[in-house]
Image 1 (cartoon, rainbow, N blue to C red):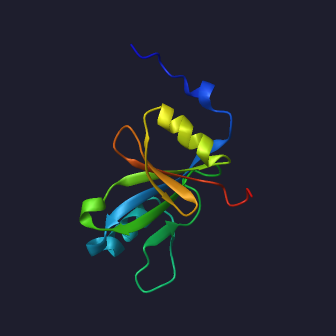
Image 2: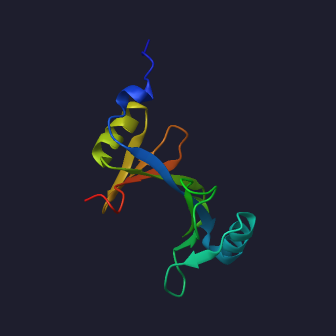
Length: 131
């Protein structure tokens, strides 16, 4: 029988939930942005371009320390929700989450996409202010 893993024993670096990304069907993306902006009472801030892939909602949800919320234009098949975790040691966080059962799906530029136990994506990256 496998011994229980205690997450506090594995964490020797700083990591925190920083963003929640809501994947929205590209066919009704603008309506989804309008809904989430109104539902969370946050102004939408699109990327530049005619059809931005991402739209952020201004400010943190729940006040200082809360996560940012962004909407991502995706195909209907890709819709879901995923979280972003920032870490000052991405590789150590990958190893910690793998020990908890997550799997690496892709390494893209400066972040790692993982699949969590509940079959949901999460992304790991270094905070912008860390070298």
